[in-house]
Image (tube, rainbow, N blue to C red):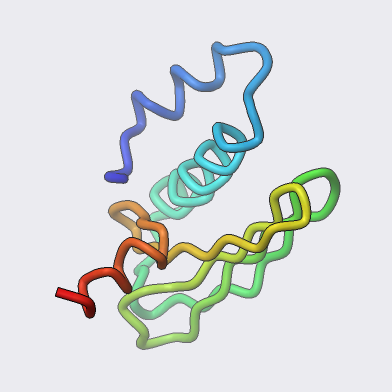
Length: 99
């Protein structure tokens, strides 16, 4: 999903979010903070952890062009790759190897 400031603001207006929507919001909001802080994504590193009902980790080393997000939803681990421009489920990217 491509990052959109409008999408983040619209989600802020919604009251209750489903777990899937919370994952989407958390990822887009994380990217939003990068933009607000004017971070150089490629030179930045991340080792961020969210705890609670929706545990998530954001990991990236300096020099890498993508980072890895791990989210645990109802006991199931889901992984995503992210940049400062958006994110994709890792599972979807791996499907490219099967074609």
